[in-house]
Image (cartoon, rainbow, N blue to C red; front, top):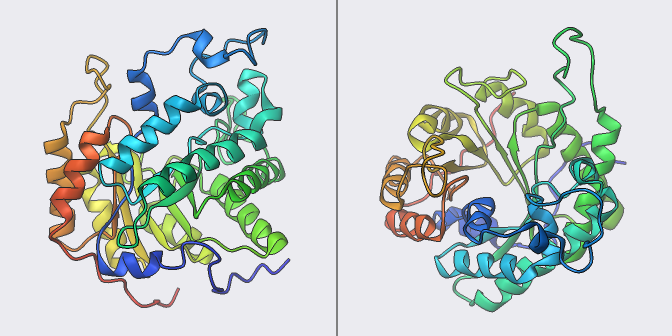
Length: 347
């Protein structure tokens, strides 16, 4: 396999780089937040197919692509109606590693295939020549980390290794690719080594299939230290992964947009690709209906400031955001030009 990641033509979403240079692109909002609004029961998650499964599956949102595809499709369509250019597949935890928690690891490929098909069908319904819609095949961070010990008394201990991660991500990518994903989104990265395994698996998949999709990368800064959980500063995180030549690079999740601003501003200075930001709707609040306090007006106003200052090319929402947030964000940034993408800088 060629490990030198040289640019080659994309086989899908060929016009997305051009669109990112012309205007600020809109990503959808939270899938989990929307699923919570349906107040689904254990029986809803199981459906007829898994009625006799011996492990509880409520909360396994990825399973809903198989048992309640109507719910997942409806959520996709709500985000598209709100103005999203890109919608994420319902696959954040759709790997054999994550599904092992529910004793369903064998479903990983099928979950990704069907989830991509559902998103693709929704995009085809809403796409127009002037506003094409794209499916982002979503790769989550995994519930296990290759960099951090699960045992405080044994710093060298690990419950997952690089090869296990690579294999799981390859299987996930194969399902997403065959299901019709237009781009791959490696998101909510808290462990750079996990992300490296994912990106290696994606490159291997591209080599094996002859297909090459744009890759979007998004990490998560976990606290005011400005570092991801495995220790990198935002700048170090970028330089650790820039070899993958992502179409976009940015941050999502843990912090609300206001607290993300200095880190997005830093990426805007150093990245030689498009910069993305899709924050939570503020910090968590378990007393709120969505688990977060920010209204659409608040979140959209924050991201409008990012757009006004030329920091971003792609924006959307993470935990706590809804179609109302995405509609407000799309309206708030519409008048602003996207960040000028910098030319490549020396390492």
